[in-house]
Amino acid sequence: MSGSTLSIPSHDGKNFDGYVVLAPDVFWRQEPGVDLNYDEAGTKKAFALMQGLNGPDAVADLVSSAQALRRRSEVTGQVGVVGYCMGGRLAYQLAATGAVDAAVCYYGGGIQNHLELASSIHVPMLFHYAELDTHIPETAVAAVQAAFSGHSNAQVHVYEGAEHGFNCWGRPMYQQKTAALARGRTLQWLSSHLD
Image 1 (tube, rainbow, N blue to C red):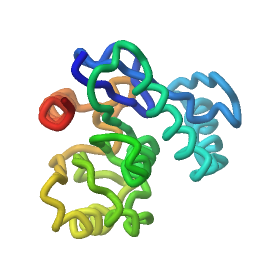
Image 2: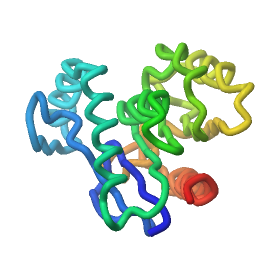
Image 3: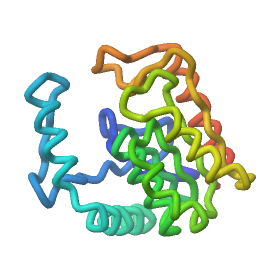
Image 4: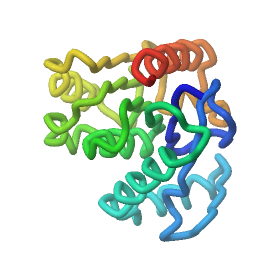
């Protein structure tokens, strides 16, 4: 394997296109091994867990996860992170620690509230946003774009007609064509930036 990804959270926890994948349990401090469905009860519980998440503890846990991934015998290259929604924000925060070598953030809610970290990020960053995202306003996306405008190793993509969660096949807002385009860009990004 030429590299590895730390996927936050993973859709299925399986191999990610030839990369070694570690999907950390970000809610282990609240409810270890929680497994939720995309139904009303699961969504309600997910929001409660997200609101109760201690951000600094979660980032520290992810730093430890990245270090553990690097120590695995099958990992022979660099480590990247891919995060979705809250995981997108955590991937961004993890990139600021220097614990990973590249990061991909899918519709990372709340990144705009942590833009003071942008100057600490020196690894390649790829951001995927949805044009019609009701959770992340256009002003937030514009703020992220402005914060990274001077970074030659950062790209921001906004997907026309897409909604928050466009990449998740288990949700009604899933868009196959948009998800495929973003996935292709993600794989190209990782292959370009991870040895």
